[in-house]
Amino acid sequence: MRLVMRSEYFKGNYEEVYGMEVAMKRKLFFWKKKEVVKNQFRKEFGFLRQKVDDDKFIDLDEVLQQVINKESSITAIVASAGSGKTTLVRRIARMTLGHSLANTDAIAGPSQLKYRLIRYIEIKGMQDKGFIKPSKFLFGGLFPDETNEECAYQWLLQNQSKAVLFFDGLDQAVWKIDNKGDEKINPYTAASAATIMYNILSRNLLADTKIVITSREFQVSDLPVEARPADIITLSGLTLDDAKKLFVFLIRQHGDEAWEKIETMSPRLINLVFIPVFLVLTAVIMAKNPNEPPPKTVTGLYKKITSNLSSVKNITQADAIVGVINKLKAMSYHGMEEGRVTFSENDLRKFGLTKEEVRDLMMKVPGNNLLSCNLLDGSFIFFFCHQSLQEFLAAGFVVEMTRKKFTSFNSKHLHKERWSVVRRFVCGLIYDETPDNIYEISNRSLKRQILGGSIRSQLKKKKDKHVRMELYTAIYESGDADLMRQISDIDASDISLSRDEAHIVGSLAVRSESLDRLDLNNCNINDELLAIITGSLEKRIQVSSSIKHLD
Image (cartoon, rainbow, N blue to C red):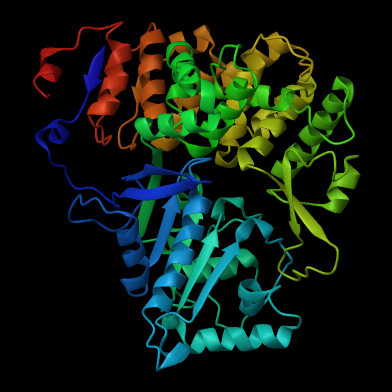
């Protein structure tokens, strides 16, 4: 086997890199206990436009300075599911407001504020309502009538440099920004939400306004070149030490014992708990079932979450809980098909659900779309406590399809990037032999053949390296020896690997029986990630002399 690496890292310098690397240090407060936690950001490769001249690490205050001091910039915060994008961007929005107020001349008053408008917009609440005005896109729902929306928008056009707009969750939009290059509009033209967003990102609209967006990686990489942000910050998550500190604190009395159990029995989870949402979910499961072994995969973790829904109001029997979960599976899948992560009360009724039945898994907020957001009109929208939970439930619906529908889904949706997390869970559920009463999978062997053949076919194609990494993750999640042993080429080059991805790469390399190349070129590998990969490889290969001299 040929192991391809880059020696520049070990010499303490890098070749030309795109993007920016940030090490965020911040304090988190849990009730009366104070914990110091480091959130780290890492370089992102492959789809950025602008070079960075150095490899400087910056903390949260310096991230704020980038937002408030860099003229006319667009900054994207990208990360995988559960990494804390929304938490971070909300905090930056509050810090931007606080900084602006703190630096205001007390005599001059609000007119001298550096930023007089700081607008936070959740994209997941925006429905596709056909053609709308930019004023409605930006201010819809804030005021009782359109006159005030127009006044606010007119002020923004005249004071662009005094505003910061935060768009949270670009990947959750029901509309897609693609091939919009010939759809430039003027500030008063009614257009689709996708076209308006394209014009904002490409700086045709509000060119002097600071923009901050959050998204999963694939949505940013799919943007037209002229609409891609110049500065991209990628959230890497917690350090392992900080993850342990928080995990032990959440579980309290048996925290150290539970952590040791994960370290010895579930290597996948130990490399996932640096992602905040997985840390919390793992802590919940380990605290509730301290005597049981920890789940070995993400699929196993989510199966335990759904099987522990015993506190739903008015539902005490297991059969009734399974019925609710089955309805949620169907609603989640149809939401994915429509590109939606929010649901109305009518959606709940359509699938035979009540607000009380979904309260453990979904959050309820006042109705929020491009047309209205009125606390008093009685309308609400619902969304899952985390998007990955909707994706897991959608996967549950997929694996229970008939053979014909499963084959159709495989060819229509399975390998689209928006469905990549669903694909991971489909692999985990299809290949999982653990008995349970929630998932009834017919024709399992046949579905495995369809799924395995489809994934092998995708790997043979010339794919974007981030897409290949998603396929590696899906194979690992399946735990299927046949899929793993047939991997002949692992190309992780130009991917800024996380701990979990490093663990997956090393594990697949060990289990493959035909691997002849492992390409780690330009992977931003540090000593910790290298130890994770080589810790697995030592079981299989002798590290060559060409690698030994790079320490």
